[in-house]
Image 1: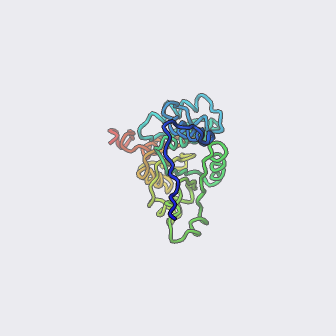
Image 2: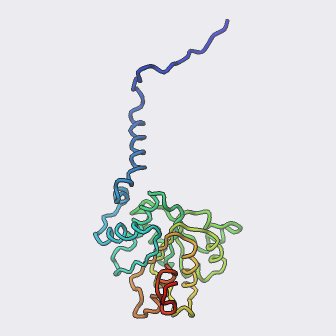
Image 3: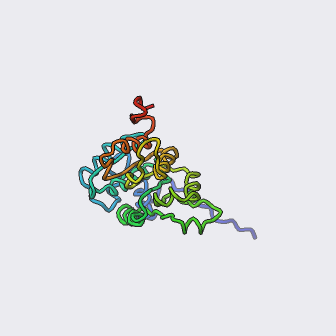
Length: 242
């Protein structure tokens, strides 16, 4: 005796008896994936911050209007530069413009940055220090992680750390307290400044942030700006900006 499995045919009229919850989740996922095209402030709806007007102005009226961000953000201490940086990270990531992000900051602020990104923007960054580099001997942790925070003093002074970092590419690099990457002149470059120069060549978007842009020494400020946009900023030794 031969039996055949019952065949099911698609009815002429859809029964609409599917799982309504799954359907709603699918529609919501589609809405969120397209929301940034219609809402220029979309990251605010998914971040745990209540930004001030000057923070919104910096991010949406200046940063986001640049096809390639090369910017020095010099604002007063306590003005919320970390929030501006977090909003920029979130917006660029949501829009699919960046995947790999690196934050360079003084060592004592590394975990503060990590906590701020996690608590306020739901972004998980890994802090890479000497112990992480040793634990990953034979591999390049800079290349394995997409969201990294590290110390400017450590990575600029330790040859192995700097060498392995410069073998990776980043879509967005943010430098906190960028005045640490100072240079007295083009002929007197500190190790941190040399690191900043090298990093500017390996990223599309480069944001420098500081509360003390020049401390009265304008040559150092010009040199720092020149590292961010070497072909567009006019310096004393390159009056044509070329």
